[in-house]
Image (cartoon, rainbow, N blue to C red):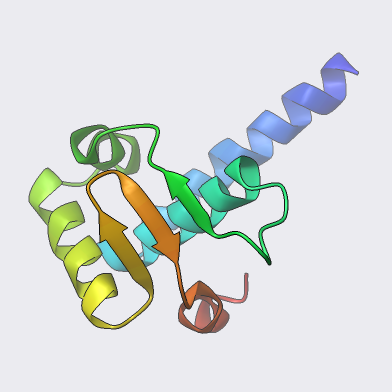
Length: 103
């Protein structure tokens, strides 16, 4: 049991290191996708959730600047990928945005 947990955590760390080579928008897409899988029991039906952390914390977690996260979120909203109101996010069309990343 413990070895499975450690193995799972190591895979997540490895994935984060690989993801850092992507641009901010793609990193944020992957972050939101992973977050929705964790926060929403039925991801296909309800894609609304409240961000558990500030944009500053997200930027720190992704290893990018806060301004870059703000710009990426605004761009994703203009493109119709997400709908954002304060800390509430609704995923509208993340699947098409993620398809080139093979996730």
